[in-house]
Image (tube, rainbow, N blue to C red; front, side, top):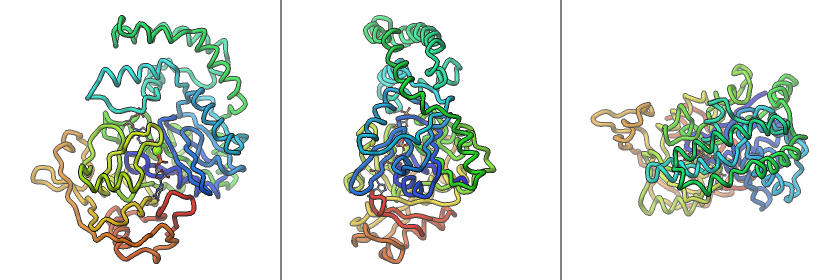
Length: 429
Ligand code: GDP
Ligand code: IMO
Ligand code: MG
């Protein structure tokens, strides 16, 4: 059976936690999109694991964890992450890396940084992990894949050609004089040596992960596809241009994970009980007051990858309804209900007022979105500690009302509620 898990908002919905919980029963976990721009947190037995590219099923020794074809891999960062994981006593024997995944190169990191700096206030607020420039090369069909990395002679030839092209590109785009020192760091010998060494260390993990997932499913095993980022960061479905450069929606697993759509049984969306976003771009329910600060501190809303403070706002059901539709969600996991404890009044966005119209479909035109004002329904808050709740009946009536309204409005069942960061702090509904 194949279950997919996607972020239903702008990322950081607690995907790592839910995947870790569901991975207890999974035989295979597959990441299919994005790279180490992702930061997935798993908290177990008092220990916190921050995973960026290593799938969040890694804590289970018998679960095969795949980095799929649509991922982009910074091999040096991946090796560092693998060392950290191993230092925690976790085995990596079951890690698999698809031959087709693209390689993030030092020039991608440099271009990401220079491009953001050149855009100034108009920048996207990327994670500066070279993700966009790597996917650009993929689309231009000059990217280096994992199967190139493990063939040094082929890798060397392609690297030489790319370095010459990138030198011209960087000089032309960002100034020949201004970038002279930075371009010098893109030295063939150094990069070749470091990357080939990384390739040698990673070669033993090489696999066709699409076959692993397919055969596991056919054998009646449980395969979990782990989303990164979130629906509104999708290159097509998100708030373009303030998006990532891959497809973190359910369909992305088919295209980038190599799995046929009819094999997917369940599509689960992960959401927070409020909304956050890190980086720039529209955010209708964003709070600029003390309530926003309260949520940031109570929910510890600081980026797992970059440490940046996350922008915080009320739960937006226009967004969740959109996520249900574009992902075909069969269930929602709603995390961080505990973060809202202590707020006297809660607000849920149930529509946008755009001119004299009230809309409930997320606008396709970002310029229209800019003019929209959220329409709120108010709910009573609660003060009881809910971090030990193990069922709906342990929650105060106000919290139950909040969940019941959400579920009804978006037309999708809440199947799991998160009441704390630990693996044990959530319950199925
Ligand atoms: P991901 O990128 O979707 O995996 O999410 P992140 O790990 O970047 O951010 C989610 C944060 O919320 C992490 O610090 C988690 O440990 C934490 N978290 C997840 N679920 C809950 C929950 O139900 N309650 C609380 N208080 N924290 C949670
Ligand atoms: P997880 O998997 C939240 C955001 C960046 C920026 C935009 C583009 O932890 O939910 P990029 O570096 O991808 O080119 O940046 O996307 N972004 C994320 N925001 N969670 C993430 O991943 C993100 N990955 C990228 O902040 O706005
Ligand atoms: Mg994250």
